[in-house]
Image: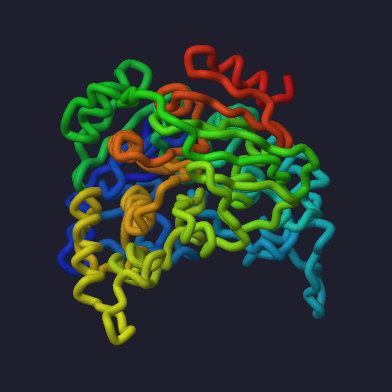
Length: 502
């Protein structure tokens, strides 16, 4: 239950610019103890910048911040942490080589008393086990090397880290984006427990169902302005979307139907590393085929094997009936396969390079002149075309991709593969962490690719997305295909049954 009365956090008139780019234009916000306050807005609306100001990463240009009624200045992340603010970012902040409990206490390790000040591994392990059990995880997880865990469990480790801080305010930035359905349910339980203890939560999500489930109030941002703060339970999500994008979205899933053509792509007897069962499936022209399953089912591993990133035992890949010898990503690119990876920041982009370089990088040979040198003018011209087509904001191709919002970074990744003129597009969680408006743009792009004669394969954990955009659904469990369902026969219950080995 929300605690009424004085706000825990209050901000007034916050402004922030980067060079000529005005990101926040006078934001007001208040958060009360025991409240889940949702921030909703398109990618680029200013949510991430606002969070970075509250965590001391960026300093405000104007405005005031009050904590428990007192004015405060946040010069760095330590200032924010001392107040009792913890943040769980969508992009994980972990060290894969360390154990789970070492990651949880990274930078604030517990020590024994005395002159030697040795690390108290026993105390850290015990506290980590307690927090992991709160999240429905085995306490034995505390001793595992973090890099051996899937992204879903790594996200839960970040949540455990925030719990150990005894924070008064926890900022959750898309915390469920990589979690399985069971892990999401456990997170809901944890959030309710935190609320009972009077802990406030700023919750950033584009999943409208979970906003309805968890949220108390919702503040909507658009183009750097606060549009409105509303009660969640008594307002409709369609109204939130209109306020967020400045227009009505007629369709959340703008699926188009095309005539089913001949087989265009086939995987035959491919055995993904760590499994023993061969995978066989095909995709025809005119259809979008989805791959569903729980976190850890082997969907991404399958895509990485097809693309030549990971080793696989035997198996063949065919395009238009012709076998493609793929032993590396370069072989896959030459064969006409594009792989839009789940982790755009570490695998899809060079964050400290410009947009034009990121867009051109998978097809650099195209931009070499007769002398063998890079034709920068031609590269920029081509990049500008895709920036315009995909409505990437800001549209300055000389910006580093690090400075873009998540949704616009995803568009840059897609532009990179469009620039290769690929035949087969594998989308792995293509709408993870992007807003409703940007999702619709990605869906329409998929339709356009199919209409133009490309093959589209989409891996997604979002069942409404799978059911709304696909013509056929392949379901995976423990590295093998357990169902191949025409969309007319697919349902959430049937997919989940196949995903759990039923």
